[in-house]
Length: 166
Image (cartoon, rainbow, N blue to C red):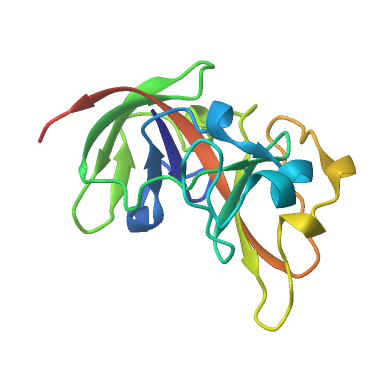
């Protein structure tokens, strides 16, 4: 499983986790290449069966359109890592507050995985068709590119290696 998290990379706690989501399966293998968007996403449905929302779509570091994570991330305890030096507990409460047992959000971010949420700017025609394919792949730890006519929100990706019921 993978958490899509927003927050200051230097923070070890904060609020806003109601804007965090979780992919319960790896979205990469189920994705659609940006250059195949108009051919493979038909009636807002990807070949793997997930729904594509043209007003709220996700892209990963290789230019693959992904299904959206489930929102919001449920309150609970998660064991998270970025696959580098730090594996630690993450507590998320029902009010959207979050806290790591040790380290910072950066420490538990898997840097090679970049993910961003895109949507059209009102009155413009932003879509995966406005993606510049030469912007990919995105370097590990870098921010995702902006596209003409689109809003963008970068998310950190955390690996979930365990959960605990609270």
